[in-house]
Figure 1 (tube, rainbow, N blue to C red):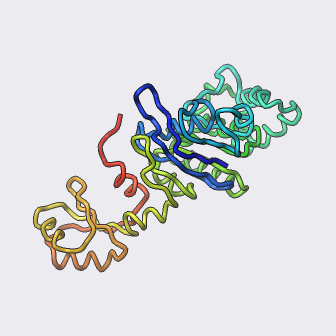
Figure 2 (figure 1 turned 60 degrees about the vertical axis):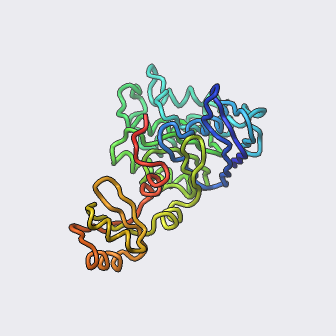
Length: 299
């Protein structure tokens, strides 16, 4: 569905996307993760044909984004990060007017809209102005709008940003249903739990480059291990750990020991080292993310 080779995007002397290569297969959910300024949104804009590439290859549906923008856009469904719904129209009117961009006959559009409003659970709000909707309802409406043209590829930019947990889980359920129906989905998100739950494969980007690519659980196992033993960071414990073969990292006032055998490691460390409180937890995609991108704040 998407193929990029040595893809590059520059803004003057600044390289926003630095010679990245990746492929998105039909029927999968593919994620772009990264801190602010990593290049993921710029990459997604190039896929949407709203930002031209500078160098390299980028094809969507086998078509070049530099020469076939109109054809590609006609096959895409896009849910933007920012709300760009028309505040002067109702929920239903927003969808009906948007359908005209794709030359969908009105009778057919009306049937599609009824189905989509049911899908995103907004039937009761169909005559409500969008300014009166909650943030979660607006995100669900944007998802419905992205699906109006029955797209071959759905692009979701931060699909659950600003949502409460209940609304976020509802969107997750809808994305999973779309995937089960064979839809191809590309998404970016800052919610690592969201990426771990939804993505078949993903890339972690930083400074315009792809740092790592793979399936979430495989990345966790390869770079972290299945479990993390957390203990208080103190000089005696740190000195003891350095004499062992354990893989560990100091994170502020906590020591993280990465392992696939948490019980054995915990027992050994409690016996050999001067640890106080020890916690064992499952490793997550967030641990992989922080390992590769660091823990410093980004603006």
